[in-house]
Amino acid sequence: MMLGVFSLGFFMSILAVHGATRTINHDQVQPFSQPEPTTDSEKSAVKYKPQLHISYGCHPYAAVQADGSVSGGLNRSGWANGDCKGSDLGSQVYSRSDWYRGKWAIVYAWYYPKGPVFTETGPPGQRHFWSYIVVWTDSPKPNHSTIQGVTIPTEVGYEMQVPPKEDFIFEQATVKVESYLNSENQAVQLTDESGEIQDLITWEQLTDQARAALSEFDFNIKWAYVDMVMPLKDDVFSTILEESFPF
Image (tube, rainbow, N blue to C red; front, side):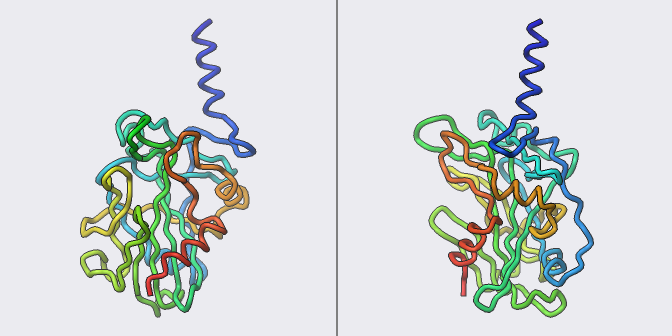
């Protein structure tokens, strides 16, 4: 009898509803397959898709699936990469692009079910974590553009490289990024280490349900130590372009 009660409780936790958004287990979220790009914007996003090397913490997972169900994330306790060394269903990188002050900006974002965020008090870590970089080119036309700069968020603003060092770029198109532990928090930085690539889905290619879920879902959890927001939703995306412009 007790087993039946436990199983029901576990099942209900997997199918929990966060506000109006349904959440499911982090390793049950079905990533979007990378579609064949048709527009210049989509082709550029594919051309400049970064490599991600994991030196600490979780591997990236899909945050949302086609029906709008969102990852429930992972408990912040345990090892930094506990239960998040990669999904059997595959992974995902998200992007959104636009002109800003004469440069074509592509924001790439990765989702992790949890991330190490440490403070002097309380348990370490946080359920849900996002990281991102901004790749700046001179045109959305993939055959007539080059990387002009790369911007990466830090604890006190942004690291800006204009242009990025050759060691950090593979074949003049692929930025090499490392997810690592920076002092007390998970972060990303440029690296000369090769990494993995994930299926890319752009903001416009998402289903309406998935885009709405990413825009509306609150990735901040009670007692979280840092604000955790989806980088590509409207107000956040425009702020990132404004604050990270390196020229």
